[in-house]
Length: 120
Image (cartoon, rainbow, N blue to C red; front, side, top):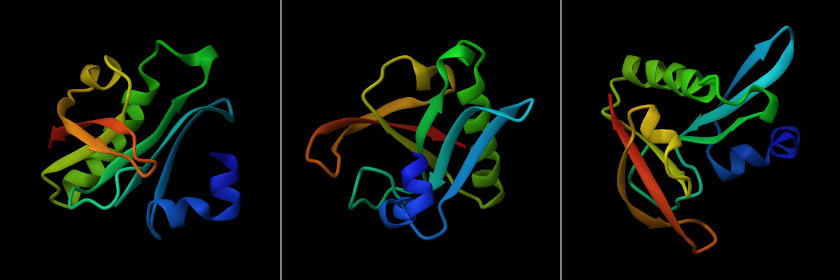
C-alpha cells in the first residue's frame, strides 16, 4: 500500500479522487482502507468500492476495520449513495459490518472474487 500511495499508482488503479482512511492510535498507524470509484473489479457499473482494508496484526479483534468502513459509509450516505461494494476472498469479516454477499465477479487478474455490498 505504501508504494501505491507514494508512486500515485493507487489513483491509476482506483480513480483520481481515491480517498485513504487511516486510524491512528498515539500517532501509530493501526488500520487503513480506501474509498474509490473502482477497486480490483474492473470494468463494472457498480460504485463506490471500499478496498485495501487492513488492520495490523497487533490491533486485530478490536473492529478497527469496521470503524473505518463505517466512516466511508457515512461519506457515501452524504452523497446519496444507495450501495457500497467490497471485493474479497475472505468470509466472515465483512458480514460483521452488515455486508451481504452479492455475487462472484472477475478481478483485474481474471480470478473469481466475492463481491459484497451494503445498502446504506
